[in-house]
Image (tube, rainbow, N blue to C red; front, side):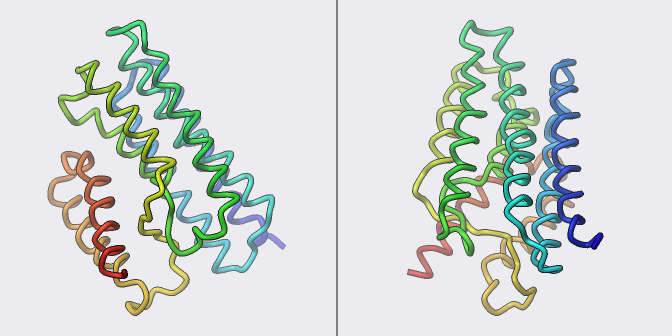
Length: 217
């Protein structure tokens, strides 16, 4: 009976992680936002993996997952961008567009059955990593660049582009080649370059997905 609720436990941990991250952003501890996003993304991967492994997927779990994702990967990066823009421009509220488009992205995902093997549009966890990793770039102090990135982010969330999904049905090489190649490339880069690689993580992911899609076609 307990195993039925185990994935939902990790979903709730994702939600709590995002909520704590928002708390720190509101305290102006903005560079820490990326770490809460990464921890939340780990819980997000884990809850889905456990649900498939234990065969306990449910409609409640699916809806709870989206609600948690909206907090951690929608509201958290939105507040992060608001906190960066507020001292620089009266248009700081533009950061809230991230929350709106993240909600749209999650609604599209929940109603699109074609996203079981890959994603259509940038997943909200990847988008949140891209935005909060701006803390490790000089772009975080440039108002025009920040607003441009917000617009680009919103477009990517709902774009009709196919991206690699890390939802493993099996861990065999065959059928998961693109996923394993991407992981093999990313993990050593993160170990070697650590936080300085984080801003390049999502561009690498998008580029690898585009190459995999072209090869498949």
